[in-house]
Length: 122
Image 1 (cartoon, rainbow, N blue to C red):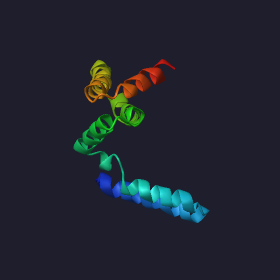
Image 2 (image 1 turned 60 degrees about the vertical axis):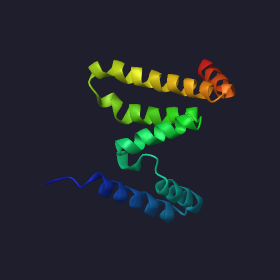
Image 3 (image 1 turned 135 degrees about the horizontal axis):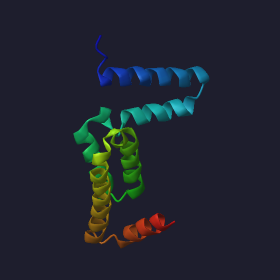
């Protein structure tokens, strides 16, 4: 028997979470959850949407959000790859970080570069 498409599975899981939140009376959390679902940043794991989101975060100088998304991808997908691919993934991560720095400098946002290095040094 074939498994349901991802969209159907995610919709089912979302409804289950929504029902649980309502059952428990977590109304604020329910509203927040619905807002998050409406603005789902991963768009059901569509690669082009994920790349668009990474670039949007990069060009809007949201380094921590960008790296949070990268960390999620690392944990959810990249960690399942064969070990031989890990250097490639690390290179992609470093390239993304370099691109952030170059973009910030080119757009005269040196404070963003300082914030990045300060947060990474901590």
